[in-house]
Image (cartoon, rainbow over the protein chains, first blue to last red):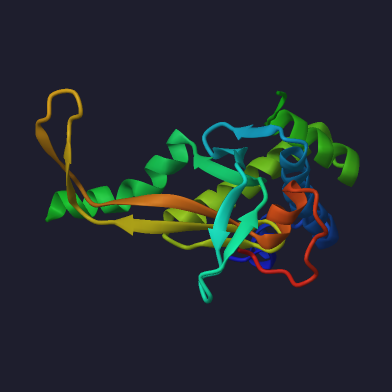
Amino acid sequence: MTKSELIAELASANPHLRSGDIELIVSTIFDEISAALARNERVELRGFGAFTVKQREARVGRNPRTGEPVSVDEKMVPFFKAGKELRERVNIRAVRAARRS
Amino acid sequence: MSTVTRASLAEHIYTQVGLSRNESAALLEAVLDQMSAALENGDSVKISGFGTFSVRQKGRRVGRNPKTGIEVPILPRSVLIFRPSQVLKARINGMEVPAEDDAG
């Protein structure tokens, strides 16, 4: 599923809204999550999951082609941890298949 | 450190789009529901400029209770992974956002 498919599905489920508005809603959500992470804040959506930012220390890496050492600056990386409910929903088929075998 | 929740995201939708507060909250929930349903079906969700959520299958393996040392089978399972896009990574590091977008 892509962002435009997500918008299309929401549009057909909400015929009273303009598709431009739905696009704006979806963009606002992801834009606001990104902005919060850029402010180093945590985004927690119970049942769905939580987005956090972790700090990676500066290190000496290597150019994999030449083997030459290169310094890598410290950086922030976004992380997502699925919430309990979503984790269980995603896993349910694997669990059922395992029980059958 | 402050935390952004459903309430603050819904408030942004309310101010940006001009729907009622109730409808803003309902639409946020609908977005999360659609994404969850796709992931539940094993589909991945690709949001350009943000990242990709996908489901990865993990095989059966033998684990060990770290306290007792007793071997326990870990059954095959599906786990959710999120790969942030280059755009999101750049934004978090306060760098110029790459023009070429991939969903990660």
